[in-house]
Amino acid sequence: MPVYLDHAATTPMRPEAVEAFTGALGVVGNPASIHSQGQQARRMLEEARETVAETLGCDPVEVVFTSGGTEAINLAIKGMYWARNADAARPRILVPGGEHHATVDTVEWLERAEGARPQWLPLDAEGRIEPPSFAEAGDVALLTMLAVNNEVGTVQPVAALAAEARAAGVPVHVDAVAAYGHLPVDFAGLGVDALSVSAHKIGGPVGIGALVLARSSAVVPLIHGGGQQRQVRSGTQDVAAAVAFAAAARASAAERETEPIRLAALRDRLIRGVLAAVPEAVLSGPAPASGERVASNAHFVFPGAQGDSLLFLLDMAGVSVSTGSACQAGIPEPSHVLLAMGRSEQEARSALRFTLGRTSTEADVDALLAALPGAYAQAARAGLADRAPRIG
Image (cartoon, rainbow, N blue to C red; front, side, top):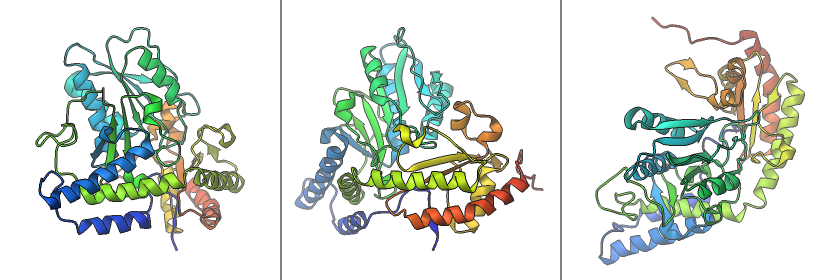
């Protein structure tokens, strides 16, 4: 049976979510229609919105359903940037290095297309954001940041950074995709303007997420045509996906106090085992005992071995993991997160991420530890390739 240790990429749908999804697929009615069938669909949709809102510490009206985390992040960053530049020039975007590519690529697009000026905030050696100065923030459109680094698992000081930004009048967007389901998410308590989450990271379906947008915050929409969801995100809403999202959110919230404890113990077993099996391995991010690392994440650098080679060798042994880095046009790319943390390019190309979830067991960890030494020895013999072989 294959071992799945890539829950940060996506996690299996929960049975409750599957049941809710398939049941809702049989309901006919556009929630924007005023007849009884349409209103039945709307009731299901709004009940789902209420459930998701409860797990995020916000009002239901603040939940804007999207097609996933990527759209929610795009809507927040582009929409807030455009809104902030409508009455004055505020081209600067405060954004940490090592953010998810949904953020990095969005900010870089705004730089090319709209003249935005990203200010890339440094990370320390463990992936923590080094706080910016808000002394001269008049030209700042927004601050955007991860709640948990999706690659190395560092829990960021969101509340403290958000408080400084709020005092300086700078709107804040939080990418909470990697935090949702693992840490408490209290939108009202954080006092931020926008927060993004995705259903498939907590056992819901792929294809739906949410942007939590404060009542007092403004964005320019990405999509026009119908004015649904406060005119922030037009389009016929996916009732079945929303109902399944709510089922996953409810189940995830019910186990949020106990499951991180179980996963932390499993993660620590994995970390100890990797360091014993491959003494050359180096843990990335905060130490587990620090409390600054999400319970589900263990990220390592394996010196002298290419992360992609290790991934494929472990896959052949029946263990699914992730490099956590991009691979574009057939050329292995170094981890931009590790580079932002000050690691060398060789180290950044030798990374492997193991992430645990609801279905993970001690047997899964033991299977990884059995396969890893041989995979590392073989990958280290192959060494690091500068580029993929040229074809043709």
